[in-house]
Image 1 (cartoon, rainbow, N blue to C red):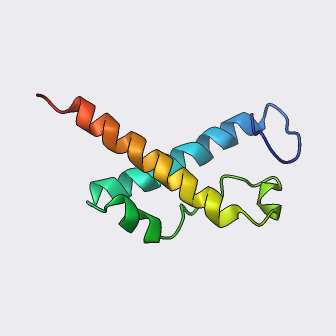
Image 2 (tube, rainbow, N blue to C red):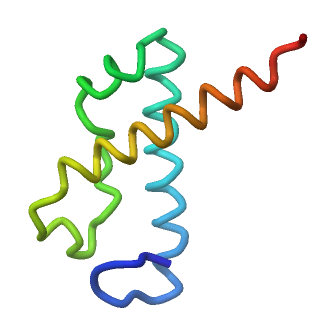
Image 3 (tube, rainbow, N blue to C red):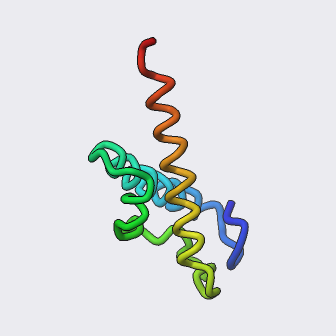
Length: 86
């Protein structure tokens, strides 16, 4: 469930899953293209706003975008490295 913003109904869960998948997919594409973490941060934020129910009404949206991209980037790279044969 979203931790900020307006309360939502269970019906939002499927939409939230799609939003998360789109964000992960965008950062996976940055990694696939060989961008460094810093280069990934220079790309436009994933096209789908992960906070559609009011959370972007505060002034920290750019910092939140950066934290999200950094977190996803690091997890995706770690997962790829763990999956490579030794």
